[in-house]
Amino acid sequence: MDDRNAVIDRLAELPRLPKPHYSAAIPPQQINLANGLLHQFTRITGSLCLNGQYCSEGQVFDAVVICARATANLAIGYNAWSEFWNDALPPTDQGPLYVEELKMLASRLAKIQLWVDQANHVHLPDTVNVRLVIFNSESFHVAYRSEEWRAAVRAKHDAFYTVAKQAFPDAPVEWYNFGAVVPSTATSGWTAVDNHDLAEKHDAHSVGLYRGSEIGYIRESYRRTATATEDAAEPVTPFIALAAGYRMKADGSGRQFGPWDYDPMYSWALGREINTKWFGDRPARFAPWNRAERAIFYPAPFNPRFPDEPFWRHFEAYARGAALREFVVTG
Image 1 (cartoon, rainbow, N blue to C red):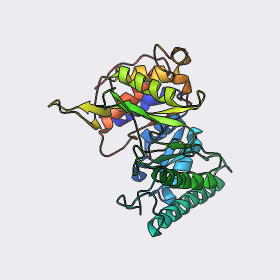
Image 2: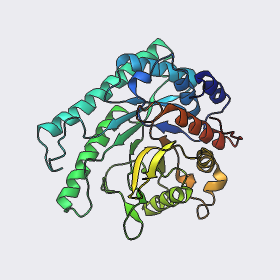
Image 3: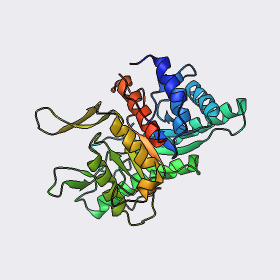
Image 4: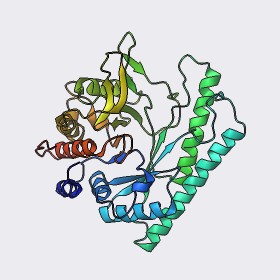
């Protein structure tokens, strides 16, 4: 990677993104006051996402300090129905594993709220708050299922939504790929993701835009997701992969998600489109980006499965595009 301090210096020149941006959960061990890259990421995005399942009291304290310095807020990322739930069980099951899963969620969110309150008290009262809860839930599928099955999936997800709102009533809840329409091998070339019943409690639709340099796919997937929502004013949140995505396999057999260091100018262009109203005002030509009240980066920075260097190069490109500033490719 470029000299770490040089990357930090270049990021320090950039303003905050015009729209609120979040990320998947930052690996807990990366949340510390000495992490200068995390300071700049938090300042530019206006947020820092805690791992709701595994962050510690000390990491929450440091996260609050980092956010206070950056005038940013916290998010919580959490994998729903992943700790105790057995995927072999039907969603109609409400036995001991169901109970334990909800108990753990309520316990963890209550602890995080307590730790945030305590950290705020040490600094400035109520300076930093949790402003978004991001749930990833891919344990259930509803396509071609009975109404009983779909109702049970709704109840499972609604239970998580309710616990989150009880803990953080002012924080919207984001479900990953809620109502998403994505490229596929279907006859039409597009498929509605079926992890959710759209009657579930939710605060936005969302879609993973993981096609890297293939801007046509990115625009059309966002457009189709936005068009499929019943409420034309409902937010549609893009999940954005920087230096990663569904890259074509070399043998032509399909695609696999992983690191993908495509030309960072495509990240620059995407940052410009999503964050500039001129593009959102022309949805037929580009995509209805005005529906994106916020955006979420996945993978998060410091994800050990993805190299650091391309992520920060693409993040800088994205932020420069959003600020309508020139980007010069380095490395």
